[in-house]
Image 1 (cartoon, rainbow, N blue to C red):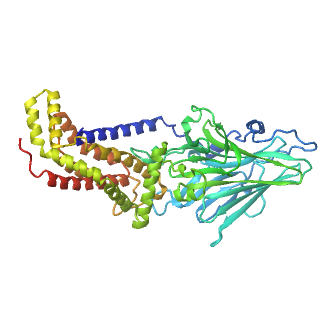
Image 2: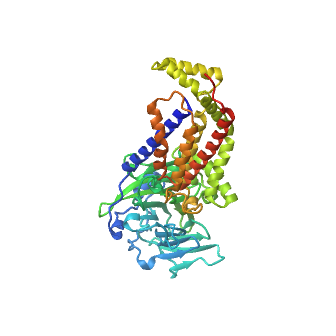
Image 3: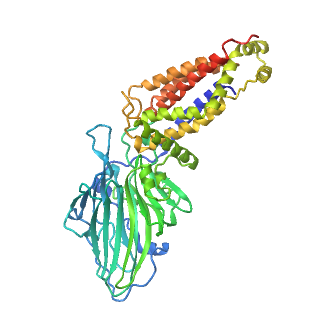
Length: 568
């Protein structure tokens, strides 16, 4: 197999990959129809039942103590019960059981300077996404995410003061049986992980038992923009979770029902809802036992909401005693280093580089190397160029052998053409004679395969790094390239790519190639140019740099080894 055929195969693989991605996009769930925000929020109750909790084994089954009376249902939280907290990175509106809105102050929605911040949690129809938590018990009424908790302080607006490390916002619920649950939200300086701590105080005369639940509910997010190779439409959107037994798992919204129920008993772990660049996740304590589940809830308008829940741990509090449980709620960007700093197993897999561990590992390695280069250059564009140079240096022995083989093939091209004329339409004899020539002159016809085979997974891994890495979001390079994760607005890089591919084609020998293959090869620069016109600019920059360095290396090897054509 010569270099040209390898290149042709690679080109058609790229086309097939694009067609597969487009097919996958069409198969995904359609966006929810536009309805009012009130209607989107008007879902049937998503509070888990105490019976289900007991069946799952997270709530001890015991009779209600004598003298204990259920508490009357508390009215749903009003606007007067909501609190707003503003830190240096977050602005959150919430009540005791539900986080209704969260703005990421460091991340503008668009590249424009006056753009509003990204709103990750929201209650509007097309972006409905909330975090909820409450309690269930067989021993009577409990506070849920729908009602029960009320602010303990009259203060409704909190702002993290300059130099302060954290803000604590307390809520409280008191039952008729003497049980009080005090919930405290703790926001850290420069932190996206909110600590949610529940303290159960039993001032009654009978033991109390219950289980905390934490969940994320949303509708599929409507795309901001669409079009070929738009990164957002190929990024995973759905639920994800982690358990020590089965590690990282995920499910798209349109597969919630088709792929079967989730009823997984887990110690520790985490549950999350992922979208492009950002996500929210509940992270229970590392030793907490809970049950992970998925569900869908119908609204009054028929718009489904998708829900992932962790139910547990159970709490058993004797009369006159106290107990405490807490979890972290991550609301923010998919920052690899910040996620690793949480010291939660595989939480960084929320940066969904690939469903396959080997590709995710490769993407993680590429991102690590890019980060180190960014520390050196201070620019992600130059870091991509530096990455290509390092890969080229690492692969120099392979590519040098490749180009030496190609140079020899070019040198002996006149003799191959004579063999073709000699044997005419007898392709079998022609192939045998050509192989004999390769053997005699020590030409390796497959010398060009390995470097391309090695670079293919690197190329795909870099594509997912550019697709998913929020660190590169809206990152400029220079001049007209203001966003490496978006396409080149003036198509300059794709045009340069066409020129480099055309020049490479002129230096590439085509011994034994039939006219049809030659015509196809002549079209390849244009085909790739059209495809790359819609690729992220950073990926096209990588390909141009790689191809440009390859062209220089090929030119030098051709000049060194094939200055004089071999005589027949």
